[in-house]
Image 1 (cartoon, rainbow, N blue to C red):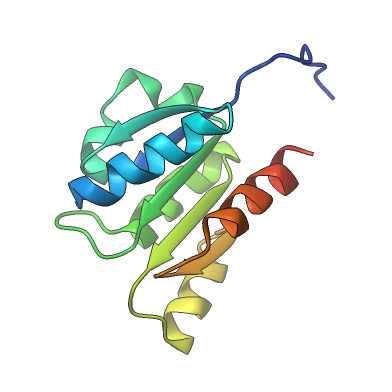
Image 2 (cartoon, rainbow, N blue to C red):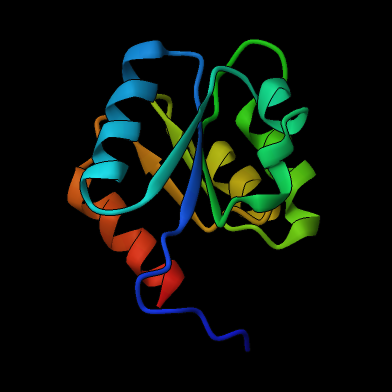
Length: 124
């Protein structure tokens, strides 16, 4: 297992087509010490240089173009943990998220502390 310095900052990609949520999540992540890279679509994230350098991806499911489930399936091969967010929780979405290798599925509105706890668990 790779050893990282204690002060190593984790980089998290936030992918959401809702500008307010992107900004809020980015601010939250940075307030607890993470580096947040913000993307307005799955395509913009996947075409960026950051794609291979992030430690986790947080994405909305319902987006124009490629949705969060498709993004999770695409990123799964890199073993990058994925947290998906949805305002439309259904058993089908939960099943699809699980089969896509999603680490956590959060339902809007979600508790910010729950997200931070999930990230701490991922990086423990």
